Length: 412
Image (tube, rainbow, N blue to C red; front, side):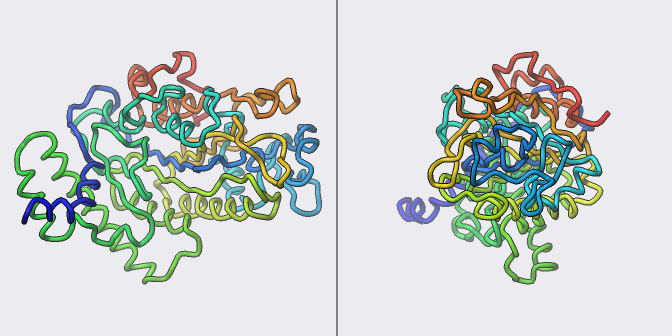
């Protein structure tokens, strides 16, 4: 194969190879017997947390949102689902209410990054690198997490399901990336025989890149085989009722069949609601309904595996408290994190609620951040996944020691 032709035809394969670039040295950090699992669902576009978990007991909420506010629980139509006498759940998220009542669903309100940016791109980068305000961080916090687990890294320990590898997983340690939908099991350029054979001939050595390439290919084949079996057995080619529900079913299938998976990342877009956001019904309600249905499906399909799995839903920042002139909301600051799973101390809205009066809002317009998102993640990593507290400095450099743990977030 001529070099020019090879590069043209293998371009997509080279991009895929970059997903699993890696070295294999591991630092001490966690108990090898730890069985905890973590799923990160990132809502790209900044979901309106004040519509997800409604502060109906705060009078300023209704004063500042004349047309998009969710009615309090005692209203006849379009009412929030009461959680604790202060907060209510958006009615479109009704499928999640049983998990709240049984104590495996919780929220952390007024959470997020203390960095002041309102840029989607910067805020998403900061959330995924775990270093708010530092644009030069080369790797993601999930990849660094893999680096402090003991033993050899397996590419199947970390799974990304999405159109491209997220920044959170970029770095030296190998991960597995699968595209969304049924394309996840379609052959890509790297699986064409002539390209695969050419790469196999190039990466025959024992250097770190060659080993990373071979293990990445093995990991991808393993995941694809598992997905193919599941899709052939249940889907039979029928389109999913909603995109997220289909992804949730696939992820649950992989968790049941692939014991090596410890952490998964799924992005879900469409949350930038500047215009026509709606209230109990409308654009946002439709998306929340799909997300809630998918989360409930994931929890149900995980079955017993939910007992040691934590599902975290997070977005780059929240929305303005005041609605704008086009029936929507603009880029804000504080938001709400969702936590679902067996280890979670559910049935509670965690965190300190700062209130929505002008003097209490961030820059007079946004929900303030009182809980750093890294505090929530750090608590899960140490308490659920048995990461040594001393290793947190590698996962979240710059996080103050006093912010590395959140009391009452997990059971026991």
